[in-house]
Amino acid sequence: MKIMASAREVFGNVLMELGRKDHSIVALNADLSSSTKTSIFAKEFPERFFNMGIAEQNMMAAAAGLATTGKKVFASTFAVFATGRVYDQIRQSIAYPRLNVKIVATHGGITVGGDGASHQMLEDIALMRVLPNMTIIIPADAVETDRVIRYIVEHEGPSYIRLPRTKSPVLFSDDYTFEPGKGHVISEGDDVTIMAIGLLVDRAIDAAKLLKNKGISAGVVNMSCVKPIDRELIIECAGKTGAIVTAEEHSIIGGLGEAVASVLVQNAPCIQEMVAIPDVFGESGESEELMTKYGLTVEDIARKAERALERKAVMC
Amino acid sequence: MSDIQKTYNEELNQTIKDLEEKARIIRQHVIEMIHEAGSGHPGGSLSAADILTALYFYIMRHDPKNLNWPERDRLVLSKGHAAPALYAALAESGYFPVEELITLRKLGSRLQGHPSMRHLPGIDMSTGSLGQGFSAAIGIALGGKLDRKDYYVYAILGDGEIEEGSIWEAAMSASHYNLDHLIAFLDRNRLQIDGRTEQVMSIAPVKEKWEAFGWNVIEINGHSIHEIIRAVDRAKTSEGRPNIIIAHTVKGKGVSFMEGSVHFHGKAPNDEQYQIAMRELRGKGVRP
Image (cartoon, rainbow over all chains, first blue to last red; front, side, top):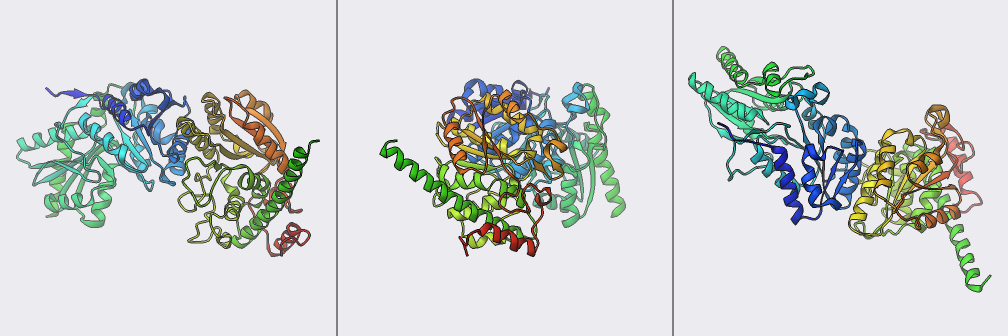
């Protein structure tokens, strides 16, 4: 039985804890403080919390202004409003002037569930990836979320952190350390490498077990730091297994899959399969039903791994 | 009138004369820069020239030698396309050499087409995408309030700019957070790229809109240095409410054929127009 934990809760608690020591931390929200858990920070430090109302554009550009006064600014709302709705504010007022704004978005991906396509953000990584100066991190569990928030508070510059709505299995132990710009090798494998982010990391670990039963040695890498991406590790894995599967709760366009593909084609071309949401909008449903319908299950990852191996065999 | 009052008035009159002279120099720089660049926005730069002059050479507390002075007043040119006027004011203040002004818009220049804080010293916020600078100014004012500093944050908005929806998000938040150290100028020159503001998008009644959003509203002639100074003095007495000074201006002010002309919103003068404009701005041989 897996232990489940909420990354959102962890974010709220860690932010509050860090806020005690560091008085330059301020948090902004757009009427979703209870959902994003910045309410925990707000309760402790009401003077350093600014609810900007249902007005995300103003929140993001005001966050930029606050950053110019030396504040470490956390701006939070749902991923769909934290990126798409305010893309221009992020581009012009945060990324271009390289300001110290940490966008921590919750409710990323299709696991948002019942709210449907309007609230299921599947393009956020794509939108943030194209922006110069932007750091993008998608933690895989609550433990990594804790480490990432502690890292990002000290990181100087624009960043985007995406957290899920749902609780997720705890994957890492207390001694886990997050290394910015580095992929984290969870397990080594000789035949194929599965590179995953967010909720898909847990599934990738299970897929590797499934594959092992079939006699296939699959390595698993947590690529939580999507930008800057760990080029060296991708090239190394390509050299070692010659077959890579990427797995993400994001559109197949512009996300982890294409980030890895870009490194591969320019450095070490090899077979790649992508587990991602096809180029369609989501719909209402239970999180797990949606993950199944849109091809993000353990079995989907294993199947893609086997397909990668078949293609590799043909190539050789 | 007491002697002290008399001396004060005489000094003020002299200050205003000096500032008017400075504004004329700023306008000459604007025309030179845009002519040299071959592109840019003369109309809105000239309409905001007196406001910027009064701010940088009289009103604002700032020090070109101490860029990160925490107590300094800040200025956000939310209508970022008026960058040439801002650059001229910064150069004349001593933030960078005046000779650098003519590099505007050229490859490798620190004087980008729209203000970039990472390129040029003295820029408090990068702007260019309309509406956003105003929100950033609110963030700066929030930071100042949080730190219990008494610096003022000035924002200059275009009248076309207030068609942006986020302006009203920002307006709401500034009064919600009682940002009385925020002083915005609305450069009400009544023209935008496609024509008269009221023709493109009705923004009237402007004063009532801002009042309804909880702002302290002051209306002035935006080309009167004296009125600009007095308006800011009045704004500084406001308690608990953000301030907006609706500055009635003339687009292209100071150059006869640019005044009130949509044509020169975003167009550089040709060589002949440049000569005429400079002759007009130099006036009585004040500057060779």
